[in-house]
Length: 596
Ligand code: GCB
Image (cartoon, rainbow, N blue to C red):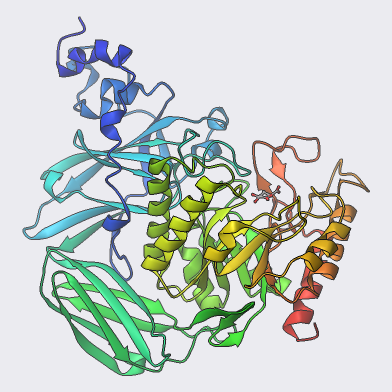
């Protein structure tokens, strides 16, 4: 009975084989395949997809992806799921936000949809998934095309050779299990959302196209440096134009690559004058565009220099989290976030603890905010596992490739609060090197911890960083605020320090305490004391307190938290400001006016 077809033949093996997932873990979808999407038309694949959670991985074991669509009456053997019919969910979405019974679901889930296609000679089709948390395996018409690791970066897969004339079936298996080898690993202080939660698109391209394009201001400030990667042709010319600079230039492609240093003196981008230039690049029938700002960001001693001038980063940390949407980001939500940051007097945001939606950096470019962007090398990672390193490095390179044309991004951060061990040092030093190889025009940082035994800023990683991020919670986890004064005195870092986190939980509303831990009054006091101490430390060149909004997280379950981290300056409704918002705003506005 179990052996009526190839699927049937697999049935016994499916029950007993614990290596069932190995063939689907090629990790073939990496930063190398990312497509430059600026200005391109795409078919949106968002909307309803057939959906099924699959706790036991029955779909991989039984190969659900290889079942052909057939009406139930035409089936000749028993089956456990109908990929082609049944329940649907919206994409993008996190399944936790769709049904209460999926709230804590962690494991595999299947997404299936039809794709109708009429082939045209000489065209190529590339699928792009904006983000899927965490492992995403891609199948087309029953064939496995590769998987991607990493929950917050985009990935692409070429479908050209596997698309049939007429109806096709695309199936994605997305798995958000927390495992020891992932980045992040099992334990985090943010919610483990699952699913395809950013846009899905299909690009129809000519046989030869621009795979990647990077632009930046040359180190002399009097040129623009361009790098291009062409797919499908070794030679030819890319025509690059920046009309506002009177620039229209052919760049020769050699072995699929093109690069040029073009004399130009663009007006420089800064938060006060966020000047952007429209540009286009054409290769044969392929045309892409972008809006790019040009600036330099460097460090000198303990200073951070923007366009050669010292800046002080008036920042705030922010998660990608929403009461009703989870990690799904909307334009309105992003604009409201920047509006709140403006009210606070910020010129800087820390996008913690993983790559946020790419629209965030585009808007920061337009609105004039500097950004710290980060990969989730968070707390204890398997620092001695080469596969974990490869995953972390790939997430970093995907982020850099996605956002390297964004002037707003001034810092790539390679980790958060990782213990100072030998394994961590070599892991993160390699990440810092990889970031610099991919992009030597930005500062590299990590959020480090204070050395509590010596009460000073001291971390062996610091010499490999441009900016030392420090997460410190004096007045909260470390109850004695005066220790911070001593640490300030004991430390003499040779490079800029940014206080990447500080803060305290402040519950508001019904049942909130009036005084003491978790009260709004206590939180306000911590902010006042922190500002008082930090403002006088001359090597501190900015701060991004924790955090703009209260956010959902499984591990915060006391009666004031109820599943939320309450360190937001604004409650989870993204409307109700706490008193500390005003305290920080007062400090930042005074600094912006040069009074401090
Ligand atoms: C930290 C972590 C952050 C937490 C925060 C907290 O140091 O970096 O992810 O959410 O503290 O609230 O404890």
